[in-house]
Image (cartoon, rainbow over all chains, first blue to last red; front, side):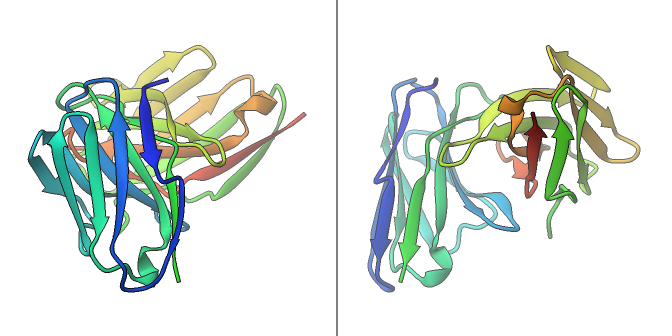
Length: 113
Length: 111
């Protein structure tokens, strides 16, 4: 299994509070991704990174920001959490540009009350 | 709009028989497709892929078929085993950096 960890694994927070989720990899892969999984929507890309300090938006980026200051860490921040951001969040990595499969972390279940 | 669609939320198959999971897409620019398998409380794991220059790719019990004119792909599992019970996602990409996922099909293989 690819070395990907996510923390925390579970979090309950209140509306309006900031939340940061962390993805850590030990594979030295260049590309990192954040997805959310919701019933009826499958997995949707929030943001991705193609190198240190290089990030881009995915299809559902509103309300989220990311940072990547080191190859191994990719942080997802909800500046002011809303109930619509209750979801399961997955981090993924891939090694080569373009057409390669992604390796997923175990997920973080976030509940915003 | 959902660019990748899996219209069957669930599928049940007897052990030993063939499982066929279907996926349709709307973007004609998609040229690379993958299938992932997901168990509860785990992240998806890569299963098999196919590029648009091929119409079939096999890996053991798993075969993916691509029909570009119909914008349709399917995953065949034969013979199906109880351990194959999971949610299966198809995904498609035109650039390689962004993949669009379907909503998943929950496969149950009955012993």
